[in-house]
Length: 165
Image 1 (cartoon, rainbow, N blue to C red):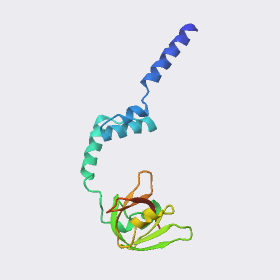
Image 2: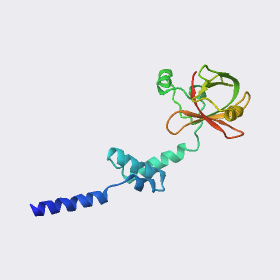
Image 3: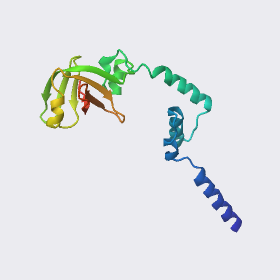
Image 4: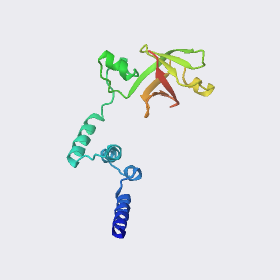
């Protein structure tokens, strides 16, 4: 019994020290290897070195071209994009503000020169609303955790927005 207890404790100690931790993944320099580490933490399946090399080659080929001509679908929900049958690979959209209106809740709606309608996620302060006026050039980018940022090209002030239509 003592041998079993000692053996199980030794095994448990080795298992604790051999476990991959999220801090270990964060310290990896290579984007592909870091992603593979996070995938392993979530799924428990690690990719082979050949799969990592192939993935890095694919990423190098597509990273240079992030803007697609399908700007009419940019900002729509995944469900609406699937209904239209289009594929969107675009990460940002450049346009200008053609008109601005306020909602009853105090949020601001922006109609862009490409006829898209975007709404601020929160009530804008006077400082931020002064940076987003008619005829200002803006860029709309995808945010990291979903949603979109509207960025003023001149001042680099950004606000969180969602597409209405």
